[in-house]
Length: 466
Image 1 (cartoon, rainbow, N blue to C red):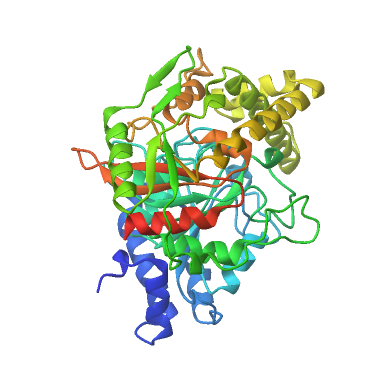
Image 2 (cartoon, helix red, strand yellow):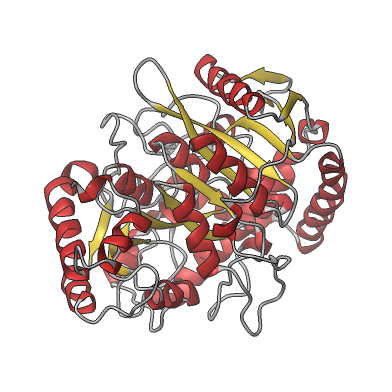
């Protein structure tokens, strides 16, 4: 039996049945990290001593003793330094004083945190390369990126260091690395997972917390743990009547699925995805049809509106400026240009140029467009697209030179045009690992559903991956 090949549910079953102890699972994960992480760059902050101590008193939850990583961005772990990909925070060893509610719920379920995983600086680009730490590499090809910004987590799960890892998604940062690393990754509906106790939301609800996983059942079981509001939350997603795990065994009736592979290019016009990504969608469409679903081409024409990119960037750059100000507060001094990457500074400077009325108008435009997009789900149950428009890219693809600081974000826009829209609309979407190209690189497909309908995504993804 190779623990590295087992998902979190299977590892938890070993503990439940007495085949393994929590300490044995944690010790095995630590050995794998020590053996492989130098080459992969997935784990940036080991927590081995505390993990072993916690393993000896692991609570009797559904995932007792199962090792997990927490992304070094977003959710906080009390007493453990968090850099968020920033050199000054790393140097200052800035440390949160309390666990996020997400971390508390994972601990109560029996998960053992063995470390923090790498990300891009403030999660801006779809890679896991930042100046604060060595880059994370794709375990399928060490010269390529695992995607991001949750690439450290995805790399670690794909390489078998841990069976599951925390991730978050503000423009595709769960789904993109899931695609690049051959994992299942679901971005929940806006408001599904609480940011308690320190935040109400992030960037007006663009960011969502969850995990990247080896299996659909792991993702569903963890969302059962994480879903649900906390006092003071500004809003919450519609409650589910039953558990997400139960959805995996619900009788599957035929669904209506639309699919598209073209995307609006930043230079104008619609562009076809890479042939490998097109092949992945075609493969998924055939699989869906073989299970009795009705599958047909269907564009969401609102996504072709050229105003999407400037409106989304208006929201995003204001968020970057706010995060820089928050970092200054944590450091007790102003963050200056030399503290961050050229792209981060350029986006923050743009964010400071966005007036209050312009920011508010960007949200109003987004909400109006979201209502028009919602009508698509009156005709279809799911929308199928490539997760990304090309296979995993070489390392440093999204780096911006000092003389062209915005190059990285525009390159990212052509790599992941299908993901960010569902952060703006708040709808759930997932990347499903169904295909590899001739080079053996994973190519994920994205399924999106109406707001609050994670149940459909889990149900269909489990069907496709069975």
